Image (cartoon, rainbow, N blue to C red; front, side, top):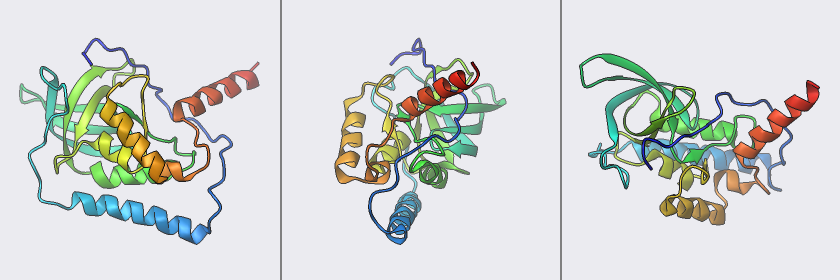
Length: 211
């Protein structure tokens, strides 16, 4: 996927819209499952750091190393500081490539944000930059300080959808399908709604209300 790719990710998170209720299980057992997922996210990153490995097709891509994540409002966007090749300090807003997390007010939205924060917030990451979107955000694959691909990890946890409209990598589609079959994370809910469809419906409702 080259740097000429034009991506149009939404700039703001929408407000609440009707969602399906969690599957028939006790509130206690569901909360325990969420807590276990979040705890595993923390445990997974407490490892001996490894050399970050580039994603497939990374040859020729711009790479930003040792970017410090200091703000992360949700599971697929963050703000970081880094030093450029001229030794100048820079700040970048980042939209993570290939995934789309549930919106905060969707089912599993808050949990997805928490998992992402536990993995990335206040850590140094490596960015493999695909492009800059129309909102000025760097769109990048993110490699964690322990050498994992963050997008892959979120798909494995059922904390994100594979954003197939903008990314065609089969391995990511496979990870999403595996999480779906295992009914983990957002897939534990009946008929989960894609976040891009959630946003589209929200925009349409706002338009109708303003007419």
